[in-house]
Image 1 (tube, rainbow, N blue to C red):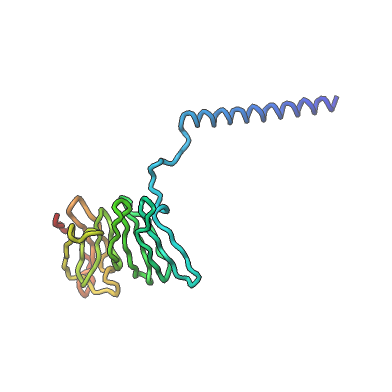
Image 2 (cartoon, rainbow, N blue to C red):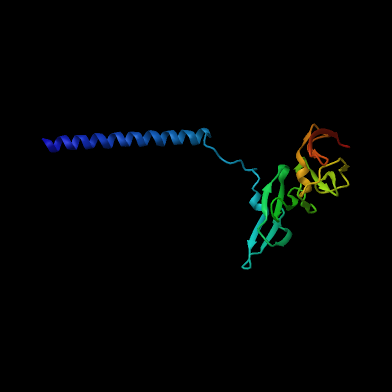
Length: 199
């Protein structure tokens, strides 16, 4: 009698497990059919498709940049590993740190295969433009072609060990305006200014 009770309990447990599994399977099938499962869009930009970093035995690194058709656009050696990041509009930023807060940066436009010149400590790279300090002046230019956009802005920026540190904030507002917050003069007074850029 005791064995029969145990057998009945075992049958009940197995039946409940089977029903539970069947329900889960049915729910999974419904989700697949309804398309509610998350899938990555086919057009998503995969930054890793456009560069490769090779480490050598002497602790040097080679960076290889590729076009969409996998042609090598540039192959360059570095004394330390460059940092790769993605900006808007499929522009890759390559940063080589040479100590805090000093870095050399250049850009690779995957859409057009353009590679920029090298910039030292850029303040902002956005909307296809870059802001740097050069010879004590603020420079706003196109990342890849200075003939498109190039404007010098001269102010009494405070002298700092790293010239870019005199600019506390910079951002483009609307189409042709630049907002900057900077340190001014020997007293390093903080000043906010909106600058109208040439179009």
